[in-house]
Image 1 (tube, one colour):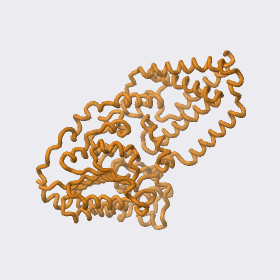
Image 2: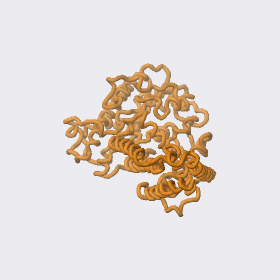
Image 3: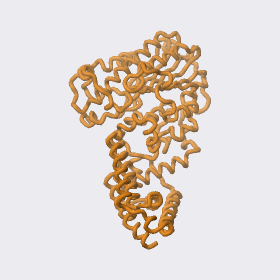
Image 4: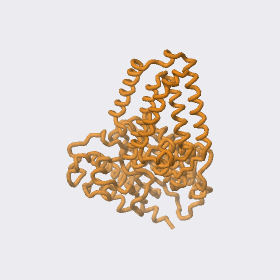
Length: 493
């Protein structure tokens, strides 16, 4: 037993020391010193290390290899944290662990941001560690036998579980400002705190949410319309007016958008609760008209827990008025669990990727013009008023996997951009199609006999690391417009 304890002493404490040091070197924002953290955060960190180390020894029987596995796991999370800060301007939180599963379900959406070379390097490094461990590090069980190994490892595991239980009983107050909470608790502690709050609130709405919702309760009949108009909302993937940021965009790029905007009842820029990704934050904000701070921990991904129980939405409100409510999204309906959540939001139908064919693609995703065609098909075939919520995909990144055409630079820019700005050119190529989609919708709706109103907005700015590094980042606001055919304005009170 004593020999086993001595064999575990150096791997245990050396591994712990390296992780503590790495936490200050790799984690951003940098957390406060250990002695400044709440006792619960210290209990959590020590409990996780004791339990994880004990399990690694039980599984592999080689303590140094087990330590290397834990180092690798922490390193991967630290790299993801840094990549997320660089791309999305916010650190890693507990709700992001769901995306680690989506990496394998939808690899094109995630893997390229991590980098194929990083993924290959991690796989090769793990294989090398396994080979070296088996060849050079002897098995503790082979040396001392299971009874002696268990007599040391099981008490260590029990101590880790006891510390985790103590951490679980703590209050873990959080501001839900990820940077502040990581600074206070460390990355692991902040993830634990957010998971703690999400679990505690999983069966109830955040305080005040229903009071602040304009769609809670029964809908009031509309008195200003002789005939209920069709309503269309288009959430355009990564759409914003680049001309508000830099002055190197050819006039033709936003020609379609400008044409519709010139006839809009309202237009401008709008703040959205997302940067570069996290579409569902903007999506949930539009459908519910709720500010993110009202959602507490659920603001990071409202669809994980909160939306599964339903929420007052514009779709449910319009349904009470007699509308048929339809969502059109040219991607897998199961992504973000929309196929499960949207019926609880009040949508009657969900039209996903199955409604589109290979001819509808523009690049790696279904194009915007195909979405406009599907929306117009629904409007033309509707005898009763419909609300159509379209979520586009064409401009979804990663953009750097696409290839430029020879004429793109000259066609889309006033002057050739810097060499590290190819992503911007690819982005503008899709923006042209977003404008054509808008015109396609406007022309089709103008020809309808029924009044129609349309809302168009961008869900967030795109991920463009090269252009942002060169020009500086934009404000993060996106653009919107509200348009209606003339019959709608004529029948308004």
